[in-house]
Image (cartoon, rainbow, N blue to C red):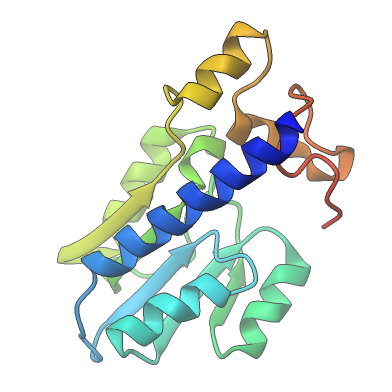
Length: 171
């Protein structure tokens, strides 16, 4: 029962966050976008459609998801975001990183790399889970990991929080 409530809250917050990000974007068909942590590319394509661009790049660490994204027309690269990005300096007009920064080990390097590949005057959109939200505070009081941290090991089902949203999902 409690897990279902958290899933509903998570899904509502996710939809609100996605809408807020889309609302930030303007039609700019001439720009190049990079989605850091593009997953299967579905979200990346929503952003590309809003902007109107066909210059769409995505990186992820999971090969199967990159194959799905590539089928949508995204130029994909397998990359660990804790490493140097395999792109030229000042290459992208827009970089999107939704729900990935909380999984980055070296934030200074990540910030430097995004700055390096972003054109001067470009746009960087980073979104992350609010560690101070009431459901994360509840998890901390119970001695559990916050919800985004529990999804670091999907194969094992979300370690450190018995209510983890992705706990029983198979990737």
